[in-house]
Image 1 (cartoon, each protein chain N blue to C red):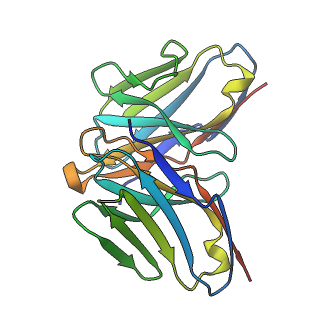
Image 2: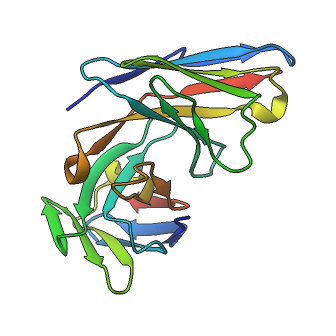
Amino acid sequence: GENVEQHPSTLSVQEGDSAVIKCTYSDSASNYFPWYKQELGKRPQLIIDIRSNVGEKKDQRIAVTLNKTAKHFSLHITETQPEDSAVYFCAASNTGRRALTFGSGTRLQVQP
Amino acid sequence: GAVVSQHPSWVICKSGTSVKIECRSLDFQATTMFWYRQFPKQSLMLMATSNEGSKATYEQGVEKDKFLINHASLTLSTLTVTSAHPEDSSFYICSAPKGAGVGETQYFGPGTRLLVL
């Protein structure tokens, strides 16, 4: 089955700096890669996603890149703000299996 | 977007009792729903895939007789934790996919926090 690894487990940045979180996946059949932000006690909130026919996608301060050959994808947050502080999860799925396999999570702390 | 609800949002029960959690897609139909479990400071782990009109598919290591899943309609899936024990205390989250193929997106319920005493 699919295995998703995520790094780093914790990340502390100064407000205004950029943050990068990286994930690798094992199943070459995976074709959908969402990123979720989860605040304590709440549901995961989709912040951006990318499908395997695209190499990069951007939405304001958030961008995701995908390298299918290397089987890795990354989340980039620019101009970080204190409200970006949360746990971020990457995930992967494919059209056949549909269920998401999650990475282990990254706790991002943005220092004011 | 799409809305998925869960009920109850939290529940406290005594060891040995059963607890039922409902997951509803409010504005779309979902022939498939997914149940995840999240222990404190850990990631979401898929427990089972709920299929309307057929048996659920359980992930390896998840006891199907302990975690009963019923997908009663195109908008409702239920998870019953039978004979709950303290180690079953966790955050249970369902999701429902909307769309098809490469256009599909998962929508998560708000989660149910279960505490077994």
